[in-house]
Length: 272
Image (cartoon, rainbow, N blue to C red; front, side, top):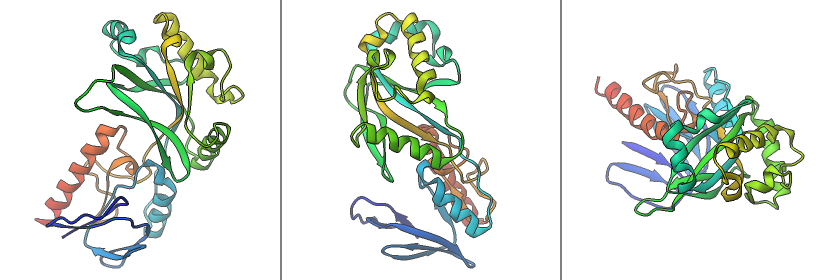
């Protein structure tokens, strides 16, 4: 029996109980796992947590309740840069990876081709994210330009809220050239100065880069706080992690793969 808790719409599967529109309140263990939700309780021998990177505080509280040490998440804060594919194609054929241009602690990564950039709301924190457009080509490349924001989720959340307020409670879209020239909502946030310098460096290597690029502010990435091994098992018997909340996951592709590894581990343990 598989119980799935999520928050979109009602769905029925022959091998699963899928509970939508439910808020997960807490997880307990007394011989079996007991998950308290706003729509009742679920009980199981094994539990897979895949609550996303922005659930760091909930994961910490859950680990504390189970006597399981939580990992300190590494948090990256920055912006999503979007540029026409044609502008970067030749440059990437030479250098291979935008990471080679990163400096002063700034990381240029998570590059995606044929993408669109959208907004997401994680617990009241508005940020950008990119997704690939299946079946069609947007002729745009996007990547994240970010800096290490430490491991204090509350500090990061305050910074994001400041940016959201300055942007009238929405993800801000600006011309990259305006950001480079100091005409940006980020102008008085010193933490973003190295990001500006990294984009200026890239403009020197790719002519017209800044004039063609759009930035989406802010974008966040939060490392997992649930410590797991290579089989996505925690030190607490029967408890597994996957996705952004797990310590070993570092990318969207890794998040998808981690879920498959975790399910395989659960089935292997169940079948002996």
